[in-house]
Length: 582
Image 1 (tube, rainbow, N blue to C red):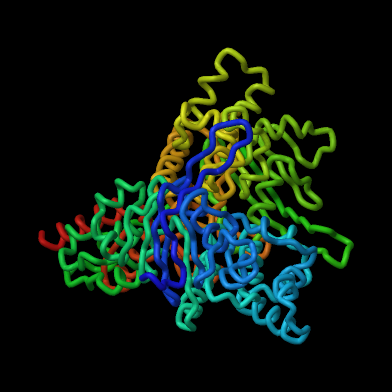
Image 2: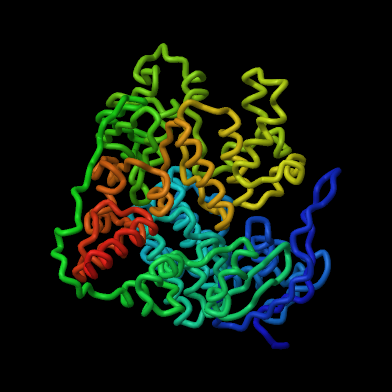
């Protein structure tokens, strides 16, 4: 592999810290990448994935060792233009690479700097807009795009450069299921066309699609090989703070009931294909029970006919909400789902007064957001919001100070240290390790943990969470979800917006599905996710457990309608098998 297209040779890197101890990120990385490969780089938060990715196109330079791209050493500044036109990278935070005031101008920026003729630039911009499904947004300012749309915009800008290598750093973290499918299809197309594709991801279901998986742990390569060589050894995965793909986990749960399930099931398609037909004698209604759809609402939050237009009365006017309604009961957990741009974040920002109703009614606890006399500071203490982009709400230099900021402002002194410690531990941040870490030196997943912890430290009456687990590694995701479930069990009212249906299925008692700024489905989580076809029609994807249950029902299994968790499916199947034998 001496002549590999990209060669990483004994690379060490420490993030510089002014006046403090530098943070070690890479500790002797050796990696060879051939042209045309499809590689997934995975690892826990802070393992060095993004730092490694930025070494591959000379955005970062090694403190020790070297990186060669097509024979060119990244340490030589004269090589940088050629390297960066060869290796395109979609950043973890896409707003960091968007420079123009209008989307199509931003996509044209790279080709223009390459000195291409105007006709070629226009053709590339059109191709990139079409490929990423962003044609209708071509004249919109990028800062008015949703987080998912901004990721597509950044991807379009990279594709317009026609690079030979594309690095995607958590590109699907904020995308809806349709967007993730689009990116997945695009990756396979680029790979077929001969491009080298490097995907940095926390989603094991994405990693299994690659030809090769590289696992980082504490800045070194802990595994490098085909996906099946690591995903068939769960103990090794868990030791690396990773997890099985969700289809493999469900297959593990069902294998005692269906021993014929293959041991190497890694994808939903493989799982669905292997599920057997029912051969027992029970009728389809013999075991089923009615689906209870509770919609009682004690008015912790009530939204009626809410409308919101960004930049109204201008040529750039964009309707985000067009008659949305929402009812969240006291002490309940409510999930918001919807495709990118459906209005989820806009709705959440009305619930703590960041946005004021233009039309319609919003009441949050004792506060009427339509009343000009309402104290918005009190609303924001009452309903704490974790932003979709955590960097928007982190402004202190040190992690401990960031998490302590709100409680300190509210007058807490004697118990402040323990409040900060408890909030940090709730999201998997060790207090002693992280309290004096610089916030700007954190990984994307670590920043999200800090953002969640800073709101938990406020102990608001209502917790509003916008994509709370995006960018988290599997173990961190489990820790955050478990803590949120404990908070809900203790009586905390929560509203959670997410593109990841498994998170919603775990957390939410009730669910509202938004589309085009309106609520289209609403009810108990079980009743909403039971409507698999309607969910698909909204450009979403039901949780895998709901899809698997629908497949089994189509094959004759008389399952209950309210199955939301693997254990519930296994229990129901065992009941059916027992009744059939009886």
